[in-house]
Structures are given as structure tokens and as C-alpha cells.
Image (cartoon, rainbow, N blue to C red; front, side, top):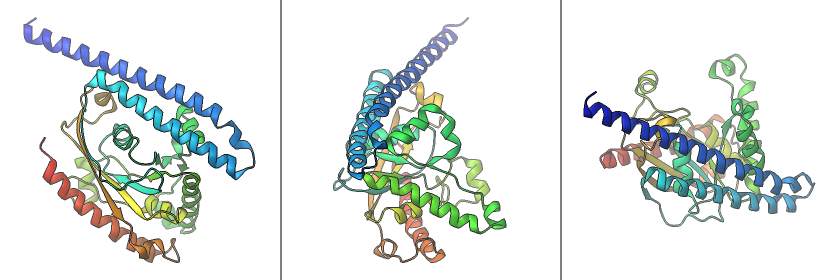
Length: 303
């Protein structure tokens, strides 16, 4: 066997060891965090809004610490190069909507790490199918990350009432965020970017899928105190996108460019947030952000 092949074999083994250590470390930290959160959140069964609000504040603080612990644990394992541009004026005592382009399963970790102790804890709308995973279910219960079940376009075409049902379910889910300052987060693209998906939907953008406004528009309907949206643009140096590539430290070089946008007053004060008129206005708002996001990617694609 040549020296080059042996060297590549050693490198591959090293990456796999890093991957195993990363996965185990994250699972251990998350498991300890969820156990602590489960105990802390027990008093929330009491019928007192003050107690629920107080416990939610403590739970969010623990959530922030768990994110910090995971972030710190990756420094010796990955030696990451996270280039974060974060704007001033974002308060941990306020409520926000949040969104980002979606490139990989790793995005959730990168987003949580980049916003850690700089913005209210990011709370993701999660697909209902994930509720059967015990760790995710406990995260849902302890720090109010709601599950949402959305019907397909075909189902809604057959039964238009399903659209109203989806709106109400998502609005009620968003109200869980109102107990304590939070960032209600949804990936506007709805799925991870790929060239095949871009071609299939005939995307208007070079590096993005066309945004969908459903979850964000509904979150605003359930969170009347929100007036700003935080937009994250993720730019990875590598083309590798798998969860295992992230665990092995192959996605350690990433730019995270964060912008804050004022939500138009006509959206905040709209009298019917389930109407097509409201959705069209919200689409114009998000499309404008996506155009700016593509410019940001074009300007920062080379490290």
C-alpha cells in the first residue's frame, strides 16, 4: 500500500473518531439538559399562569446553557471557524420571528450556536412526525418547541377547510412562545436546498429555494408583541451537507450573516391574518428579504 493511501486511511479514521465523539458528546449534553428541564418543569402542571411564566423563564435559561455547552464542546473537537456578523439592537428581553436559508441538518446547531446569548432562544416549529423521538418530544414539552401538522397542497385543494384548520393549529402553537421572550423560528424554504429541488420548483434564486411564508405568517398572528424579524444567512465553505459530515468536523468553516428587519406595520395591524390579502403582503415582505439574502451570498461566497 502506498504512503498516500495509508495517509488517507489515517485521515478517514481520524474523522470517523471525531464524528463518534461529537455525536456522543451532543447526546450526553442534550440528555442531561432534558433530564434537568423535565424536573424543573414539573410545577408547570399547576393551574397558575404566573408559575408557568416563571418556570418557562428558567427553562429558557437552561436551554441557553445547554446550547452553550454543546458549542464549547465542539471547539476542541472541530476547531471551528464560525464567522458571525450579528447586528446590534437585538434584545434577549424581546420577541422576534426568525428564519434562514436551509442547507443541511447541521443548520439547527449552527443557528443555535450563532444566536446563543445574543438573541432570545430560537424555538423551532417541528414536524409532527418527529414527536415519536423521545429526546425531541421532551424538548417540545420542556422549552415549548411546538409540533405542527400541515396538510399537503393536494389535500387542501380537495378540502379548503383544512387550510383554516392548519392556520388555527399553527397560531395556537405560536402562542406557546408568548410566555417568555423567544425567537419563533421557521425555515422559510421548507426543505433543505439542493440543485434538483431548485430546478423542480424553478426557483427565482441562484442559491436559494423560493420562500414559503406559512409558518412565519401564522406565528405573527399568534404573537402580537412581535415587530421585527431576524434573518440568518448560512454560507458553508464545503459542499458537504450530511449530518455525519458536520459531526466529523467537515463543515467547521461557515459564515453566518445576521440581519434584522422591521416587520411592516400593515402586517402587524392587519385585521384578518388568515386572509389571502395578509398572506400576499407577507409574501412581498419575505421575497424582498430573499432577494437581499441572495446578494449577501453572492458577496460572501468565497472565504
